[in-house]
Structures are given as C-alpha cells and as structure tokens.
Image (cartoon, rainbow, N blue to C red; front, top):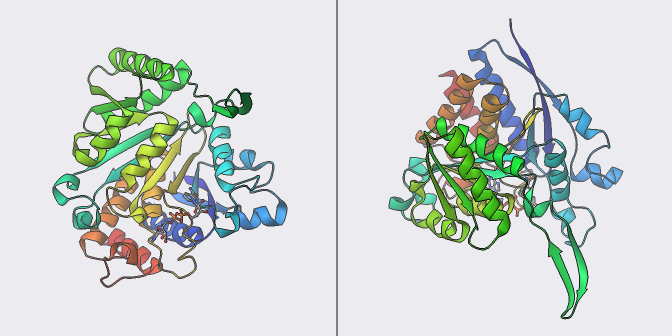
Amino acid sequence: MPHTFDIAVIEGDGIGPEVTREAIRSVEAAATLDDATFEWTSYPWGTDHFFENGQMAPDDFLDTLAKHDAILLGAVGGPKWDDPSAATRPEQGLLTLRKELGLFANLRPISAHPQLVDASPLKREIIEGVDILFVRELTGGIYFGESGRRESPGGEAAFSEMVYQQDEIERVVRLAAEAARGRSGKLTSVDKANVLEVSRLWRQVAERVVREEYADLEYDVVLVDAMAMHLISRPTDFDVVVTGNMFGDILTDEGSMLPGSLGLLPSASLGESGPGLYEPIHGSAPDIAGQGIANPLATVLAAAMLLRHSLGLEAEAVAVEAAVAGVLDAGHRTADIAAGGPAIGTAEMGQQVLDALAG
Ligand code: NAD
C-alpha cells in the first residue's frame, strides 16, 4: 500500500522559500524509490505574518503543526527585527515552538566533505575525516530556567537559573546513545561538573544511563571549556557528543565553522512523539535573499534527516545524502563554496541533486 506522508512547510523569510523549494523537489525525487507520496502544506508564518497580524503564527499553530508527520523550516528573521530591544523576536517564536512540541533533542551532524576541506579555516590534516553528531538538549537548562532582576548591594543584579531534571537528562542521553550505536559506538558527554551542581547531576545521570543500558559504547566525559579547544585541535576524535542546551548552543556553532560553510549543515529537532522539526542551521541570509544564489544543500540534507528520523525512509535518506555528495564530487558549487571560482544558482544546484538521484 502506498503511504502518504503529511509534511508542514514553514518557508519563513529571506532565502527560506528558495532553499525549501529545492529540498521538497529532492524529497519528491527520492520518493520514487518507494511507494511513498507526500502532501506538503505550506504555512506563511514568519516576519510578514508578524508585522501584519502582530504574531509570528496564529494562536492555534501548535495544534495545526502537531497533526503533521514532520515540519520542514527554512529560516525566520531579517532586517525588520534589527531593533535588539523589540519585545518579540523570531528566536522567541522558535523557542516556543520547540518547547511546546516537546522537541527536546537537537541533532546536528557536522562533517567535512573531502572536496571542500580547503574551505575550512582549519588545516586539512585537522579537518579531514571529521564526522561528528552533536546532540544538544533543547528544552531545558538555562534558556528555560527562572530569570529576573533584583536589587543587590552592588546595584541592579540579574539572574538566569540553570536547572536540569533527571528525566530530562536521561531521555537526551538515551537518544544520543542510540545514535552512537548506529554509528561508531563512541559517545562523549560534555558538562562543567568541576563547577556547576547542575552539571554534577548531568554527569551522574549520564554515567548511570550508559553503564546500565549502553555498556557496549565507548564513553567519556569532557569539560565544556576543554571541549571548546579539542573541537578545533582534534575534532576527528569525536563521534556522538551529547550536552546541555547552552553548552550545545555554543559548541555547535563552533563546530559549524569546521567544514567552512553554513550552506551545507542541516539540523533536526526531535521529541518523544509528534512531528520532528528539520531546518538548515543557517539563517535567512537577507544579504542574498531573492537573488537565486543561496546554497540549498543544507536544507536538502535537512530533508534527508526528515526522511530518516520522522518518516523511517532510510533508503531515501541515504539516496539524498549520496546525491549531494555526488554533486559536490562532480565539482558543482554555489557561490558560498566556490572560493571565487565558477558558481551555479540555487535552482541549478537543486537540479543537479535531482539529476544525481535519477542517475
Ligand atoms: P545567516 O546564516 O542568515 O547568514 C550569515 C552569512 O552566511 C551571510 O553572509 C549569508 O549570506 C551566508 N549564508 C547563510 N546561509 C547561506 C546559504 N544557504 N547559501 C549561501 N550563503 C549563506 O545569519 P545572520 O546574517 O546572522 O542572520 C540573518 C537572519 O536570520 C537574522 O534575522 C537571524 O535572527 C536569522 N536567523 C534565523 C535562524 C533560524 O531561523 N533558525 C538561524 C540563524 C539566524
């Protein structure tokens, strides 16, 4: 029986519509491998919606999204939000979306394509062979703890509380451990247990989960400050890295610099049930929006993650990833990865992926 998958698309702002269009085309092309068909429902939520209606999305947006099998997101944000003191910001909308949909784990694969290692700011011998999967806890920790201002003897003071519950740590460590089993079997947990009580609980719980349920894994713990150094001095030593929300936010951005281009990196946010959210890690790139030159490959690779994690279509996911690798091997480049050489546009790069899938 052919199965129809129902996917929500939030194209968002800037280059969002341009790159999601190519990702949808690649999924449609990959689906010919199977009997799967797709229904794409587009939701026009983002900056324009906010400035017309006073909110990024309608009040019932969570119910609307929860009905879908998965969500594909371009990017939100842009110059209209430049005022840093604005009461509402697109980032806030994304935090709410992740929290309300229970998307507690953010997966960011970071690998260096052999043909593009020279685009990295790091030396070839350091970057060659990098293949890391970051698993960042996404709905707890300091970004969701209590915060406020108070008077202090030194004047006004502010606080942001970092809290983790045992079950929040357990579920994200389990998800990371499962991912490690499907890869090289190596898991690294990152914390700040030499200073923070919350990290001491993280370490204690993570170690117990791995000892009791994943004793087959090679497991180690690294302090976050050391990890910031190791990531650029010996990144090939890591496979799956699991960490809390703020440490993960910082380390994944550092990690995203390793391959040398934002335009190639996807991300998935997963919960226990309900739709996962898939997006490129880059933003709306207002400086190049509407020019047809954005690199669509990060969003195409996000769509491959969607096929794998939300739809269970592993063969199709592998086919899309292989097509992207083939296109890069063949030397096709958008401007961001062309190093000043000849470049093709967004739609043409998308077409190259389709041709590779067909070939
Ligand atoms: P950005 O990622 O949009 O752009 C940074 C630089 O990388 C720009 O020079 C841009 O042209 C380039 N770039 C990004 N993606 C590219 C692609 N696919 N192909 C070619 N070049 C690409 O980051 P920014 O400029 O700091 O942010 C722009 C807006 O996006 C801001 O409003 C920000 O808040 C928002 N943003 C949204 C998300 C999201 O929706 N998840 C993430 C990050 C930033």
